[in-house]
Image (cartoon, rainbow, N blue to C red):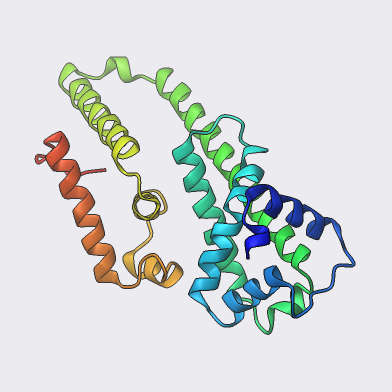
Amino acid sequence: MSHLSSPQNIQKTAVNEIASAKYEPTHSDENYHLFILAFQERDEEAWREIQKRYNYLVKKWIRSQVFMVSSIELEDLTQITFFKFWNILSKQKGNLSNNFPFCGAILKYLKRCAETTAVEHLRKQRQLNHLDEKLKQSHLPTIDAQSRQQLDNASERSKLVRRWVAANINHPDERLLLKLLFEYDMKPKEIVHKFPTQFPTQQFVYRLRERIVKRARRSMQLSSYAVY
């Protein structure tokens, strides 16, 4: 694996593999073998190596679509890309080689997942911006002062919590769990099924979520309302 250790070498190899329609896998093709192990044999170590090996390239593909993105957002989008990639290919019937006869074909699909994730992110951002504009033009000024104050307080609490998450949740598994729970409304059972490596049991999900909540409450003294 040493000859593919640098992001530049991985990128160069991947670009060549994607471009070469005549590329044929061999027993010495380490990249292709990793995908076979991960998707056909459900080898968790191989899947972790794929994510490590192609993390840099996936981020590059996302940045080509989303120009303004924070490091935290980029990491989240990268995790979502790998989730989509795994979720679809792991459900393929038959051998992986039937649909993807060479490594370049697999990487083309990974690139498509990254670009789709980026486009969905941009669409969501446009929807949020549009909603903000609608709210500014709405009839909120006509509501009574008490209701207005309640809305302002809820908005400020939400902003406070999100700022705390951005500043204090550094582990990618914790960020992924928050996104899956609160943005994608996934149940712990679904999370365990789709991310068995990061979240092996439902009890693990519950414990990790509770630890994050307790840390946030202690840090921000938010005992009077639920985090997030």
